[in-house]
Length: 435
Image (cartoon, rainbow, N blue to C red; front, side, top):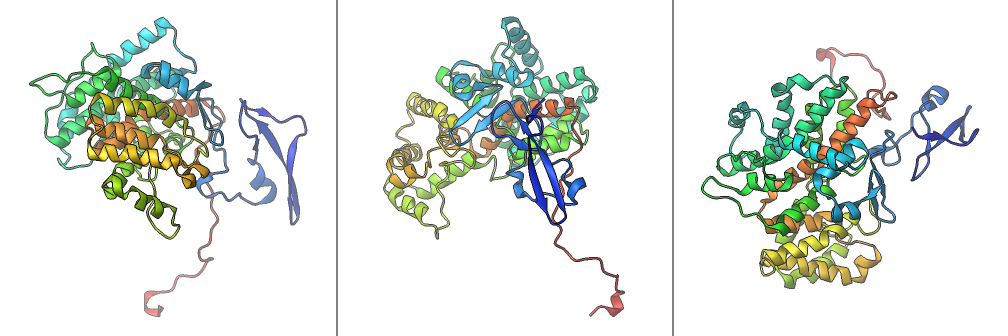
């Protein structure tokens, strides 16, 4: 638990007719917080914080971000170190259980996840209810929520074993569901998971294999995909994670909570950023038009924005982008894609922007969405799958936060308040007397 401030340490808030002490609480790292839980009772006033950008909504031990200096930690481990040396399931274990697994724990966890990758055969028929041209995110969101109807033997959130089984099922099945959504959209048969492949290789196999031939796995290809998964596994109390926690605070089943997170992630301001990067590149069109669009990006009166540069949280270089940059260049080289016009344009845009004083002074560096979009495009993923891949990677983070919330004895059902600015109480007027 977080520690209260030194005895008597508090911030004093005073106004017309009231004065209240707000206890100061220290976390293990990062800004202290003011405990305002008793503010309304003491003053009759709420705080006003649209977007909750200055409000700590919970206590968490999972992920820490310092956007000013570009730090991202999973359970205390730097994202750069994990992206370079860990594998994805090892990272999943860390997020779920707080420590890196030893050799036996790692082996058991990998086996458990591997043997849960199959989905109920009835799901094949469930998919047929979707239109063929449905967006894969709509399909994945619907199927995730429907898992509660197929796996209702593990829905007691008060039972630790049920919570563990549900967590393992979702982490194991989300790659299968994502691949099925893709195959359904392109009219290809579903490819069943293989127990002899690791997590990432198995996903790529289900995505790109066809019955007539196997998908040829590339070590660079697989490593880049694993790195994308690790870098997107969690990111503190963002919109989708907060949605999962809010849904879970009502006691909703875990499948419904993760489906809510997927729905939130689908918003273009959240999970659609790497897709927006590709849209921007298509708009720019050619290398010779880059200077024109950079000037437009500098013009405050122009609606054009340079997508994939800068970040709301990181005021320095996005540490995830630093970890992904090398992978982007390796994938392009391995796939011989440097000469593809769109990808060549992306690399030239990166080079020019990193040398432009306007962007350097404002620390508008390429972020993780810029590089992930390039990699996924080079690998052959359609843009409609970009946010699905984000959801796949982030599922473990959502589950970790959901589990932490359920186990927190101080957790209450979420109930934000409001600043009401509508009409005051008035009397009903019969329709005949209304003007």
